[in-house]
Image 1 (tube, rainbow, N blue to C red):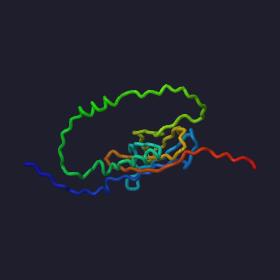
Image 2: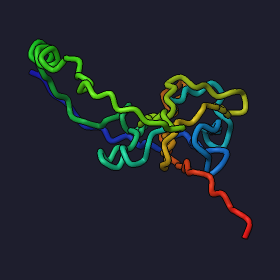
Image 3: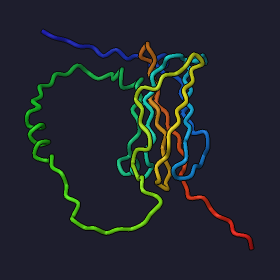
Length: 180
């Protein structure tokens, strides 16, 4: 015989307070961006918290309706006991069939452009650590996209407490004002 019981557990003690914000609300293409992250546990700085930090094109994220998972919930799923048997061989065969190198079409079109670095993910670092004050700062060069970027941070401390947060900033072309 086997049995299981569901025990509801509050997540209030499993959450951290996290903020992740860009130093500026707007940047130009190719500029250096700065993201500041702060992590607290019950109002006190959380030193040595690990943060997965991503800066991704908002348009791409809206297509998939993606938001980072909340580690407080993901680490404590509250699901009933279940068993599954999986065989990964068919998935591997499917991947092998899909793996190929797409051709470039053989076109030799040439054009001049000052902006060439267009990416969906401007920055990704899965192992940012907070200092003794519960803060972390990262700097990176922005791509040439003229878009809005979403900053997503998922933080976890040594005890398994966590939180996820999102913010945004824009990259726009500078406006030149000519004298009248």
